[in-house]
Image (cartoon, rainbow, N blue to C red; front, side):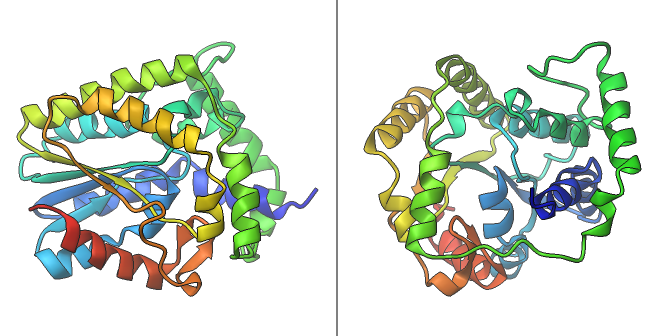
Length: 278
């Protein structure tokens, strides 16, 4: 087994990952734009470009593996901490399998520990004993397992081409979890209502990917996603910006078939700013 992904997972999903973003928020004097979502949005939307082009302080709370439950919980945390008082726009990052995704039910459900100091909700994670004991055991295991520390300076290089895109898409779009879909629709409805009540404009953003990945996405998956999204946004004035299959960029703008590198993120964010109805 290749140990590199384990090292990357530890670095990216450790509990300090959310904490670092929270600390960046504390450095903002008047945050006006917030971003939620998963790794596509974490890597692909550059908050510094928002500041440069719009003059609005922007905080990106998209995190690898994050689901709609924690997207909503983060917004509620921001509200409790009086950090949404100047907010004007909230980008809700989705992908075509967002409604099928529940982080706490995945094999990587332990990653919810990263939110624990701020959001003491374990969602649907089934663990023996208390959540506090669960978090302690995970941290203790990682601290003692040296393999997670030795390999930080190595990289797991990905091929960025249509063949790899098709292969990745076949894995990503296998998800079909009706119970999770039902719950996530209720969460998104609550999330949108929460923002509207605070006069914050929600903007749904679906990120681009390389052509091979896009073409391998089954039409049925896209149809199911839009049926759920339409149900959640019915009767609401919600801007939906779907770049999947409508914006590709150059292959050199990606470090992975679904993830922009820094150059690609800068270019895409400039495009996103132009398309938002301010």
